[in-house]
Length: 233
Image (spheres, helix red, strand yellow):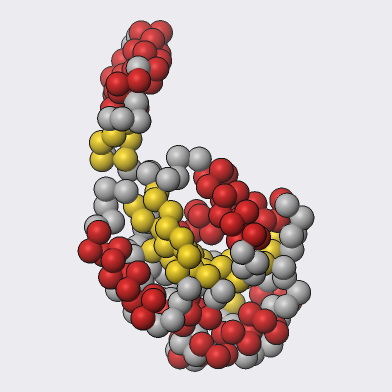
């Protein structure tokens, strides 16, 4: 459950290292579940541990206004396509093109690219579109998920339905992907105490800041309004 991004990323990192997973793909059943946040946090955690890490972002749409390369597996990877963002951490944002969309559906090409062209990196984290992504301008996540050593699904608590999650899991297993974990994103599932604190600050903060803070502190500290009483925003 994601209520602390750093802690969740470190838990995934430790599991990946223990399982000797080098190429890890992160995806979700439906869009906007927090996949990019999990991917970036995991890549950063690996880099902080001293491991040379590459984060591959395959979520960019066609004509996206980003530092994106029109790279395809099997093609030479130019040095300027890799953006070094921190010590031990680099990012490759791939722009979909009519030429590379088909190549990113080739599992063999992707596996060779991960193991040969990207062999310099101790870990490769792949930020994938959702399994049920309806935007045809994005790269398909299926082949990359199959080519990775393992796949982690991210679900948004309260918004990702069980049927959607089951369908995504079934699809991944059906194509032979190694589905190894599930992350529950609690971004929109707050405790009642958090909701009361939020309303207190919004309604009273401008006029009675001390009262707003007192109410918020009491609400957050009350066990009954805490984790045992969660609601979906």
